[in-house]
Image (cartoon, rainbow, N blue to C red):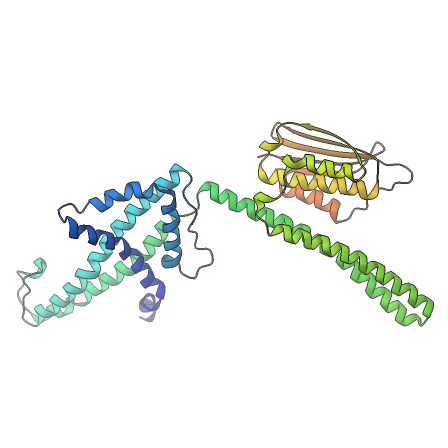
Length: 384
């Protein structure tokens, strides 16, 4: 019994009831104007639902009244951008009004019916209730009093759950909104993965070196050794601070909207920056870079940035060849710089791992390493 009555103790039951009643306010106003045409409010919902901002208002109401307190209620609050979304909004308004009419009727007449059944059991036959107008007064009518109340319970709880399910289908995110949300989530996972590697490799390494040097200095008891250890700790700490500042820069950038982050359409700016740092960059860009989808374009930019950074850091002012091609549903990117006797290959740290991971998370592939006397970074990212 307690489980049966539990919905009556939830605030959501009554906020959903209010949500169903709200359309009846407009209907009531119209009935005062012209009761002979009750269908006019339903007709007015058609042009109203085609207004893009109406979908936002309905989504906000659904969040507040149908699923209050839920972190992700699955109701979109974005304006309608496609005709499919506008038609879904129109259908939602019509369904909401119909269910509101059923709810309002049930909330008024079912309690009245229960009361009149009780009056009939007491010997008084009501004149204004057609069902009981011809009834013969008898005590057993008292046994029927709970039935309208149970029906009212079913209407309030059942229609509340039903309108919530319909709202999720008709006011839920469209395909384009789900794609945008997935893209946003993908970008966040990529950045979190990169930041985790940055912290593990740079900060973890620095702390390990500092702990080992401090322990060795304390155990040695040699002032000269202690001075050298402290100098090593200081140098490692400075390098760790530089790495931390770089990671914090990534974090600050991650707070910006995904669409505001650089893409391969801005590759020229990146190449000019590398040339200003002393590198002799020979770039060949083939295909329409501005047509590359957002995730592939942003990750391609990051891969190019990391490859140029490695070339500047480890090779210095040497010729760097950059090849970017968009063709056959694939984004191909290649960066090469010569390896000479006094230039060592880059260490396989977090930067190179990040290149491989960025490509893999988008379903592509990457390769880094020596190739015919050059250091090569090559990545292929699918466009679909």
